[in-house]
Image 1 (cartoon, one colour):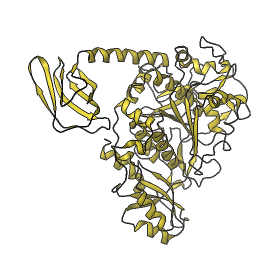
Image 2 (cartoon, one colour; image 1 turned 90 degrees about the horizontal axis):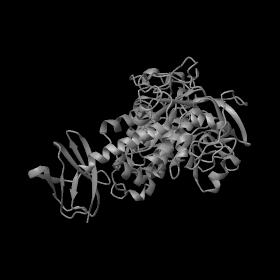
Image 3 (cartoon, helix red, strand yellow; image 1 turned 180 degrees about the vertical axis):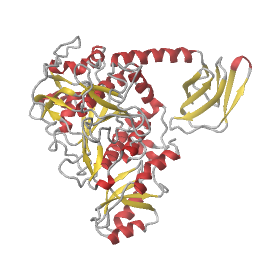
Image 4 (cartoon, one colour; image 1 turned 90 degrees about the vertical axis):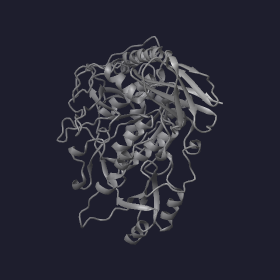
Amino acid sequence: MVPNKFIKQLFVFILTSISFLANAQAPTKYWVRFKDKTGSPYSITTPSVYLTAKSISRRTTKGIAIDMTDIPVNQSYINLVNATGATVFQRSKWMNAAIVIITSPSQLAAVNALTCVLGSAPVGRFKRVITDEITNKPTSSFKTSATSTGYNYGPSFTQANQIGADCMHNLGFRGQNIMIAVIDDGFNQANINPVFDSLRNEGRLLGTRDIVAGNTAVFEDDSHGAMVLSLMAGNSPGNLVGTAPKAKYWLLRSEDVFSEKIIEEDNWVIAAELADSLGADITTTSLGYTTFDNPADNHIYASLNGKTSVASIAATMASRKGIFVLNAAGNEGNGSWLYISVPADADSILTIGSVNGSGIHSSFSSQGPTADGRIKPDVSTMGEGSYVCQPGYNFTGGNGTSFACPIMAGAVACLIQANPTKTNMQLLNAIKATASKSSSPDNLYGWGIPNLCAANIYLQALSLNEKRFESDLKLYPNPAKNEISFQLNYEINKVQLTDVFGKQIDFTLIKSENNHYKINFNASIDNGVYFISIHTSNGIVNTKFVKE
């Protein structure tokens, strides 16, 4: 279950983050927070109604419980808001809130008077701060190569080789069956650009959503997201091969580059929730926020603690739902701001800084630490002189952490494919432990330049140790009926029994001779899969059994 403290943090921005000048024009969009999810037709015991099979599978594989934050906002509350004449524009199940279009003070008063409403606050208006540079010509750092995979990387070889993505490809890991949700500002011509031919022809472009406009049209919008996508999904032999050329993709537009009236940070939350519901394994975002329309509302350095901004809180929530979250650090290293942006300050995600093809820190790459002292970025990849594809099938060089981030995201997809049962924290630890500055991380490089093949070896060794540990456990009978027994020659501190939804099962533990233990179910339990977590003096042993 998600701790109550964390849920409170998730909503605190509604009450504390918005301020106004007395003479300012009232915004038309408000966050409306609801009191509860009482009376919802949904239940945590029937998640297939509101989560895809892929989303449920991700949770089950990683041992993550389904809880009340997964339950959609109560539709009856939405209906009550709409009945006031206001219009619900978006809704957030994680925050149990909705973005509502308000046209008059009396309408706002009517919404706030509803018994289901806890409170409301006008949404902020944000500016994108990650501004990337297209160089329009290859740089001297480009190398070209074909490898035993049969891939001819062309000038994109350097960015793939620098982090061991080509090594993972050689092992057969190219992102197959891994779902990546790309959250950006538009994907201009991605539906016709030849660099994405294999993506489209093989049915791996799963879908699109425009959170800004409330539809599915994303191919006529800005080109930034299309260039980001090319670094992962592009496959043009001799020109550009992305780091996850066989992954599956959802394209989600959360940013409007032509207007400051759309609340992009809040849209990011909606996009992340959608990615979760769809079953995404990874989200990658090359956007960041620090500046509001009203300078009085700007993020300040003290708020970069991963617990203040709505997007940063949601990024941590997404990670806790089992999504591997990556975000660009930002390009403010040479500016007055200097630091990373939101949601790059979030905990439990991978924030990506930039280096050049020689592994030297890019001066524009935003720095850490976070306000609460955590090192950021986490790792750095080639965001200076990256080789990208623009709309029009135009290959060019580019600078920006926006490009460093998807290069890493595609490589992470390959790592997850190779290690599908590993948790986000295990993946994060492996990436950091095998990066170039693992013994001396800092706030320019983070833990340094990653090596995905080394991280894979690290995780494989971890799996061998786990297997050795678990081989000491004897569990019987399996399948079980009314009880199950186990033998383990370690001092046992605690035993937990849960179902696939994370609900704890009541039982009685009886110890007999020779370290034999019996678990008696205190009540009848349904047939299905259950998990046992045994906390011992040597660590934790996790296993599962079938009740029939």
